[in-house]
Length: 613
Ligand SMILES: *[C@@H]1O[C@H](CO)[C@@H](O)[C@H](O)[C@H]1NC(C)=O
Ligand SMILES: *[C@@H]1O[C@H](CO)[C@@H](O)[C@H](O)[C@H]1NC(C)=O
Ligand SMILES: *[C@@H]1O[C@H](CO)[C@@H](O)[C@H](O)[C@H]1NC(C)=O
Ligand SMILES: *[C@@H]1O[C@H](CO)[C@@H](O)[C@H](O)[C@H]1NC(C)=O
Ligand SMILES: *[C@@H]1O[C@H](CO)[C@@H](O)[C@H](O)[C@H]1NC(C)=O
Ligand SMILES: *[C@@H]1O[C@H](CO)[C@@H](O)[C@H](O)[C@H]1NC(C)=O
Ligand SMILES: *[C@@H]1O[C@H](CO)[C@@H](O)[C@H](O)[C@H]1NC(C)=O
Ligand SMILES: *[C@@H]1O[C@H](CO)[C@@H](O)[C@H](O)[C@H]1NC(C)=O
Ligand SMILES: *[C@@H]1O[C@H](CO)[C@@H](O)[C@H](O)[C@H]1NC(C)=O
Ligand SMILES: *[C@@H]1O[C@H](CO)[C@@H](O)[C@H](O)[C@H]1NC(C)=O
Ligand SMILES: *[C@@H]1O[C@H](CO)[C@@H](O)[C@H](O)[C@H]1NC(C)=O
Ligand SMILES: *[C@@H]1O[C@H](CO)[C@@H](O)[C@H](O)[C@H]1NC(C)=O
Image (cartoon, rainbow, N blue to C red; front, side, top):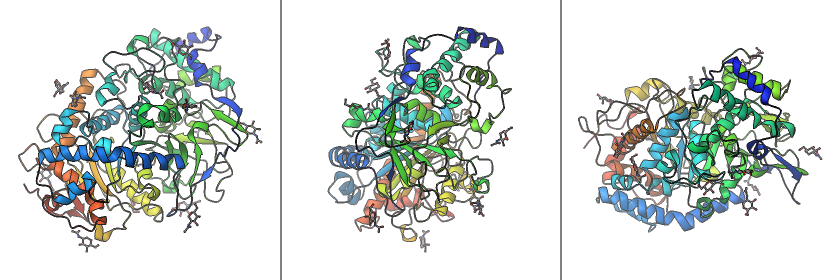
């Protein structure tokens, strides 16, 4: 849990409060206007098996497939070939575009606070064609070839910052540009050395900072919208994961600090407009009155039967069968077709909703916790007697929709919480939507299960949930107990799930699972298993984590005693094309057969007990 170490003494800052609104407060205020003619708030997405994507998404994907991916796959193929020229011909044929079959790849990056954001970023760096070390390692280019990219919680900090900053390299994303342009709308880096909760460690400066953040919610409150602790959290996150904050202006209230940077506005960045980036999707959970707690995994908070929500830059809603409806992201805040709200979909509020785990601390009447002073401050500035303070509140665009199956159909507001609160910390659900036709998923797991490492529990939760909705989702079989992951080293090496296609429904994707599960094989001590509660990092700490993550993403599953599998880049390529190969009616062969033997989990064991060289 985060450290909000605050002394009540700083509430004396309250006295300076009756001032004019800051520029950030204005830029954070939703705008209310008449709806455009013909406006339609809700799009029903159809029944499972026959769901539709928004026309905007469909056209983005179509354009990306035509204009961007053919070149991206060729570049990736040339990197793979430079490490191993003896791939079976079908791999080259598929990736070079000579076959009519192409893979559709999605990448999912998990929650787990800053650790997960850094680990996810480190893996994507190893897949990034713009990094010559990644190209030389034979993994570079897969990022550019992906169609979708999902994130939740810490993973949402990473992917929202990446998309809204116009897809910089990972080094530039995290550390900022070498020569920054200090302005409201340019990228300044994660500013990770400033703690999310107590940025200065000087109580006087931090005290002023807290009141600045609370003051920035004033405009939204005065405009009649519900404001909760999630908005306060959002304004802190905005200084790290949205445009406009630099070391030199961190405390300067003449800047907007990411207020007004909208998730829907990502569509206007040059990289998105040219279809150059994987389509980004952020996942949240919904906390609903009357939810069925008997469907909640022990130790978690949200039942598997609550709908999972996604925010893409065009639409927000759920593909789960109990809702299957969407509203335009740009008009979130709106509840009917006449009066339209905009400026509600702040990029940092989407990341703030996806990482909203304060309900786990239950703020109801809890003003004596470490959050107490901030809650007291907010309550005195913006009294809201009946509001639940520990969730992110979004006006419900789906009021009255699907009354028999949608648990929040009669609620005026949706209470969003951390996307991992149902136990699924890897945002897989959007990538399993059949209308998206994804046939291979690269799943990055940096969950904290034991000692800052992942133990596979998130995959078990996803398996359990997909079994509840068999008409909507197919998921490859994964081990049903955490012990099996450990015993078979499935979290300390890359593992493929769903290789035995004869036992699967044809729309079941192949899963390439890469966990932050232990130290790398090169004998270095682990630096990637930091605590989720660590909310600041020095640059050298992050660089060391990125370096080690690079090793983890490029080492594969080495022979006993070795530090690296020289065939890993080929094996990865074999997995990436495997569903396309199947559709083309070609048999696995050559190095791809031995690779699948080494990396696939089939049933209750690996197909071979020990790696073969
Ligand atoms: C699929 O949905 C479309 C419209 O969304 C509808 O026209 C069509 O009849 C549906 N097909 C099936 C088999 O339900
Ligand atoms: C954020 O800043 C970058 C430049 O640093 C710019 O390219 C991008 O368009 C901005 N994003 C948004 C959403 O305005
Ligand atoms: C930031 O934006 C606000 C509001 O749009 C504007 O008033 C302010 O002057 C800008 N600050 C700088 C330094 O450009
Ligand atoms: C994107 O740019 C267009 C044209 O400049 C503008 O009309 C639109 O409002 C922008 N969209 C967002 C979400 O900022
Ligand atoms: C809650 O879930 C349990 C277990 O699946 C089920 O038996 C029960 O009917 C559910 N209750 C409600 C109100 O849906
Ligand atoms: C539409 O929603 C607005 C609030 O955004 C409300 O003031 C207005 O009364 C509603 N109009 C109708 C026709 O329901
Ligand atoms: C939170 O606390 C309130 C009051 O103390 C209690 O009524 C409520 O059940 C609690 N909620 C949860 C989710 O534990
Ligand atoms: C998954 O489902 C199985 C069978 O119902 C159950 O025993 C197990 O506890 C569940 N595990 C998780 C993590 O949901
Ligand atoms: C798991 O890894 C350990 C250490 O590298 C090794 O000794 C053991 O044989 C591996 N187990 C399996 C099932 O591969
Ligand atoms: C693949 O699945 C089929 C059908 O379920 C099964 O008979 C076969 O043993 C499986 N093969 C492996 C290697 O697990
Ligand atoms: C990370 O790796 C780079 C290049 O391999 C090296 O120069 C740098 O010293 C490393 N940084 C840390 C902190 O380990
Ligand atoms: C490539 O990745 C390595 C490992 O993290 C990093 O040290 C290096 O700076 C990156 N290069 C570029 C150009 O981003």
